[in-house]
Image (cartoon, rainbow, N blue to C red):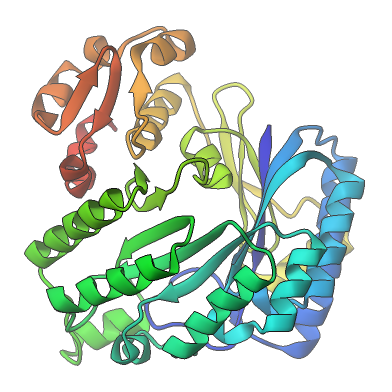
Amino acid sequence: MSGLYLHIPFCLRKCPYCDFYSEEVCEVTIQGYPDLLKQHLSWVKEQGWSESIDSIYFGGGTPSLLAPEAIGDILKAINRTLCLVEDAEITLEANPGTVSQQSLASYRSAGVNRLSLGLQTCNEKQLILLGRLHDLQDGLNAFQWARDAGFDNISLDLMFALPGQATVDLEEDLCAYLELQPEHFSCYGLTAEPQTPLQSSIAAGELSLPDENFYADAFMQIHEQLTAADYEHYEIANYARGGYSCRHNLGYWQRHPYLGIGAGAHSFCADQWGSRWHVPADMTAYQQALHDSQEPMRCLEAFDREAAMRETIYLALRTRRGITDNELQQRFGCTLQDTFPEAIASSAPWLINDDGRWSFTPAGWLLFDRLILPFL
């Protein structure tokens, strides 16, 4: 089984913390973009893609800037060109300021069955600092409209370690989010990515982010409150009620193949030891390649055995499930203990072995970037 990712690189206004590829909306470009995606799908079919698709993810950018009719047409094209399983998970990322009661009902009717809602925070002041286009009421309305439309699988984004955020602010966010009772949470600490307006504001002394101690306390506060409310902390940044883990993202962490469609999209091919591909983040070049019937994707990396093993360990240890020695033995002919004894020793007590299954504790995830280095 494979996943299908479609990148929708348009925003009404780019958020100051975001470093994903997106462009401000141009009406002509966005109206023609679904046809480019359908051309790309046809190209993929002509090249012999035969993997069954069990998850589709419309990411961005702001996918909810595409009209429901356009999303529906794209889904029909996917059904015509690729082998889509009957119970496929179909996710649409949506920003509260870009949806209405009618559009959400139409997305649901078009076949979208999972909604990822970019709420980020319930704090009005923080929403302004983050450059979001919606206010709290917009976010609450969007969630209720989604429920009314029949969405029974909704994920909410929660951002923490925000400029000026205090413990009481995060507590209020968590209480407000839990009252909504979504099926899934994605919880991210705000970071100042290079060459973003946020990074420039911090460098100029106009804003500052909380220190590492606050970040650590906030991470554990979220873990404790969400797990106490029966959400499984199944990946560093993700929580879900039973049966609602994101199938598409699990495919990434389990190193399953996935196909990326659209300017700026990435793909993973699992043949041999695996290879990663991307479509350059250039709308003009993307359009020209499809017009000329040329391959729009470029190879980023082809893995050998050792690189594949190290990436497998890196991705698996991001998850609560972790990785077993049996899996490593079957794939690579080794165990974690035999291959990385020093890395295991340096990761104690955060890396645990439960009858041959290796995984990090939540406290270990806080140190993940440091603890994982000896495995890479």
